Length: 215
Image 1 (spheres, rainbow, N blue to C red):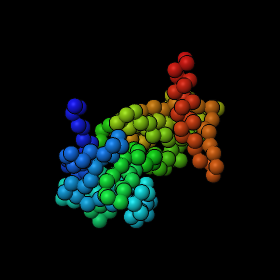
Image 2 (cartoon, rainbow, N blue to C red):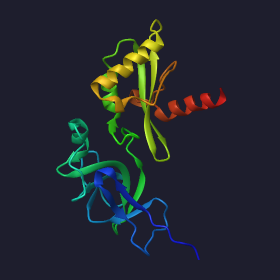
Image 3 (cartoon, rainbow, N blue to C red):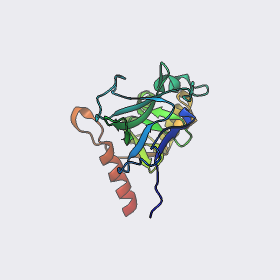
Image 4 (cartoon, rainbow, N blue to C red):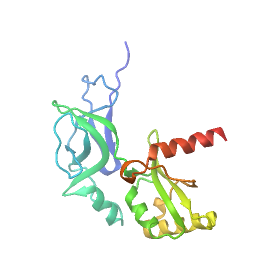
């Protein structure tokens, strides 16, 4: 007879476990995280409105354990706290019985190894002011439970690559903070884009890492 395993869910921002599978009631699905424990949860759409049962949405948590904000980082705090509700950045589905199932992360909010959260758009805003860039793409990287960001750049032909990378790092550190420095800054010949000029992030990262493996 095997030993039963139970999933639970908790973050630094919730000061511990806030969702868990009840004992002797573990779900059969690996992505189950259980039901709320001493907290309220809401599965919300982009506008923060609750979605129907069975519909994917962002997991939001409310309760005594939810933190009051990031230390000396009002911008990050404002991005994740709304009237006491903490936006986790995790995508879940809640069934009609109240069980929650984890379905990944919102693509544009990255929780860095330092514990800081950063929005991809914040990096884009800084890069828009840097001369010498023809194009760029900020891509979230996920390796099991670790997240980071990669920056792929298309420099202008006459620009010194090393000097440009130093300029980018300095600007991000000055305008956002050292925690926002990408784990990877790589020049590429072009940025693949699809409909509405949207960056094809998965294709870009897959192509890059395949090239690295073959080198």
